[in-house]
Image (cartoon, rainbow, N blue to C red):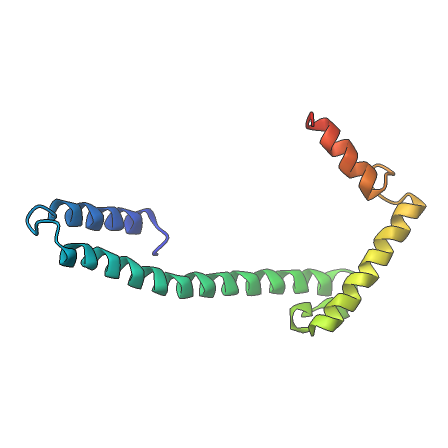
Length: 129
C-alpha cells in the first residue's frame, strides 16, 4: 500500500503543506525540524518495511524454484532449500557447478559453441565498444 501512487501523492501533499506554512512560521528552526524529524522517522520505518517485503518475495521465489526442481524428472532434489545451507556448503556447490560449466565449454555444449571469454568479447563487439 505504501508503494502506491496514492501514498506518493500523500507524501507530496504533506511536503507542499509544510512548504506553504513556512512563511507563517517565519521559516523557523522548529518549522525545519518538523520536516526533518518526520522524514527521518518515515525513512527509518520504511527500511524495515522494504526488508520485510524483499524477504517475502525471496521466499516466494525460492518456493517456486523448489517446486520446479521437485517436479522435474532427473533434477536433484537435494538442491531444494539451498538458501538454508551453510556458506561453506554453498561454496562447494558453486565450485561443482563451475566445473560442470567448464566441462560443457570444453565439450562444446554451450549456446554458440564458444567459451565464456569468447562470448563476452563477441558481446562487447556487438555494442560497438
